[in-house]
Length: 137
Image (cartoon, rainbow, N blue to C red; front, side, top):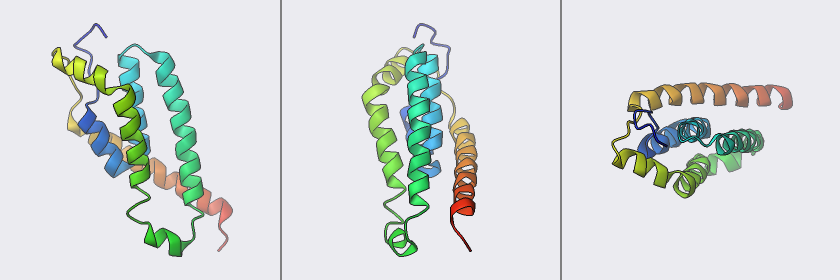
């Protein structure tokens, strides 16, 4: 990336937002980073694969029996975080570090907080829709 005035999302912002807000926030921020790094093909691939994997993950999780889900309440949220963190580390960390090292700007933590809120709302709506279609009362 040549324009250091272009803002990107930092590693910490992506990690914190993904940890507390789920995978959608991390996917979106990594998508925006790819766009800002000039890699539209990787951005499109990430967005497509990320949304499909997230939809399948929450779809399957919606059908986990309550007794099992109750035992895994702390483990299940860590899975999307671990996947996004690993993918970010393998694909974007060097570009993020280089951008920051060269004086490039990053979005504020408040931007990550806003994405966190939107991510939580979208995920809750998705799970409620899945539940309403497939779970009988």
